[in-house]
Every structure is written in C-alpha cells, then in structure tokens.
Length: 379
Image 1 (spheres, rainbow, N blue to C red):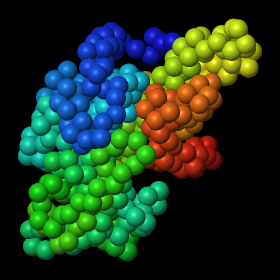
Image 2 (image 1 turned 90 degrees about the horizontal axis):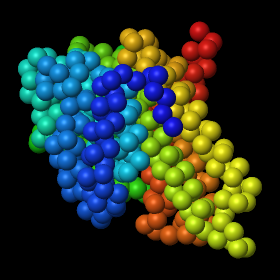
Image 3 (image 1 turned 180 degrees about the vertical axis):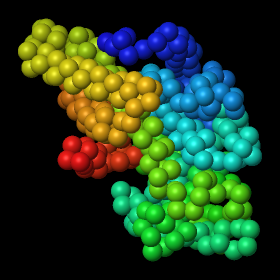
C-alpha cells in the first residue's frame, strides 16, 4: 500500500521512472553474480543513465534538487531494493559518500566531484568505521598529521563499502588524538593516493567492501571538508539525512518477502488445499503486512518532516529501527512459509535472508537507535 498524503506530484513521477527502470533492467538487478565489483559498476552505469543518481547531488552541480529531497531518496531505495540490495547500495553510497562535499566542500571540490557522482563517472565511498571504532566513533585511531600544505594519514578503516572500486573516499581521521569526537576532521581522499592499500572483504551477501590501510598518505589541506575538528558533526549531518532512507531500503526487502510468501502460499498445496487456507499462514501474513505498513508510515513521516526543514534525530532513529527489525521478521517468516524451498541457495527468500541482516548493524545498530531515541525522550 502507498501513503499518498506524504507525496507531491514530482514523487508520483519518480515512482513511474523507478517502475520503468526496475522493469527494464530486471535481468541485471534481480540476480547475484560472482563478479560483484563488475556487477556493481554495471548497475551504477544504468542508475546514472536513468538519471537516478541525480537525486543525491544538488541541482547546481548536475543534480535533481538543490537540497536533498528525502522522500525521493526513500522512494528510490524502497523500489530499487525490492529488486536488488546491490543496486540499492550503489545508489545510496553515491549520496552517502558525496554528501559531506555538498555540505562542507569548497567550490573547487564541489565542481570537481559532484557532477561526476551524478553521472556515475566517480564512485563514492564513506570511510569512518575502524576495526575498533564503529558505534564509538570518538575512539578512532586513524590520524591526520599536518605537514606543511598537506595532512599525512596513517591508520586503517574497515567495512568500507565500495572499497576497491571507489574513485574517492570521504575520510574521517583524528587531527587531535586526545579530543575524542571533537578531534575528528573530514577529508576527500582520492583512490590513487600514494600509501593507500586495500584489502577486499567477503560478506554473506554481494557487497563491494574492504579494509583501507594508510601508510603516510598525503592529502592536500584544500581537501579538508570544513574546519579542523568539525568532522564528527559533519558525519552526523550526513547520517541524519540518509538514516530514514535505510528504513525505506529495508521496506523494499520486506515487501518483496511478503509478496513472495503470498505467491508461494497460494500455489503450495498441502492436504489438498493451498497454504493460504490455513489460519496459521493467514496470521503470519497479516502480522507481516501490518508491521511493514507501520514501518512505512514511520519512514515517510520522518522523510516528510526532513523535507519540511525539521530536525528528525528521533524520528529517523525510530524509522530505521522499526523498519529494519520489521523487515527482518518479514523475511524470516517468508522463509518459514516456504519451508525447505526457502533455504535453497539462490532462492529469492534465501537471498533476502542474507541481504537484510546487515541493515540492523550499519549506519547505527538497532541498539544505538534505541539509545538515540531514549536520549531524545529524556532531554
């Protein structure tokens, strides 16, 4: 179901564009391939050709809107992720990896990077997580030491999406090692910077990802985003803008699981009648549908509020928390309804089961969302 009261005319037009895109490229999207990096690059090319990457860049640099239209981001992620978690990743990372440049980059940096993000020429990445610094950002160890007109980077990052295929990384490092979050600064690091090495990682679902190692990597000071010590605030502004859209992505997966469960239950005959005739199955479907619809309301309420200029720290956390947990439940129940057929490698439900799990961890775990929500309540 759709909650049309959250949307304007241009959102209805976007829905049509997204339907055409996913239908036209089903063979590219609704499949897993061993060459996930190449697959990701091919998908990004088609996202750019369809004009969808313009949603993450300001209109003055080749984008669709001067400020992010969060409802559009959510619609895109929900529709794309219904078909492909990898395609959603490539769409989202173009925004997540470049938005700090939009917010705090110099005009020179914006002109150089943002148009190429919009047309798919540059693949973006967001490098903040470290082996021992995930939720606790202030404990990061990667350092940026000033040296004349450069900053010298030493340290490492882990679980960095698009590692190895990105053209540039929005990098967060300590310019003051003793100042916690207030000592973090942000930079643009080009992928061909000397001293940068990359080790690929393999996750349970297709995802170009890896570890970054920095050994005396030089970054010119004009590639700092904002001022020294402003990196943490900048990162939070980026995540706050995109967090509700993580919930939308989870909705896409959960809705696909519900549709697959309904289709299977209608056609699976047990004791001379379809599974849909059994009350136990009916109750499962009813619970899934209700949870997903509630999640949808939370997601698009948060997105609508953000588009009205409101601060949505609590609302985005609620949307991300409830949508990812609900989608996980929906997919688990879809596998249960499919029985053994839902466990076969390559089955849609099996793929969804692997795809959904990371959503309750990245961009703030479910536990961190609960902390955010409770902090907002107890202010």
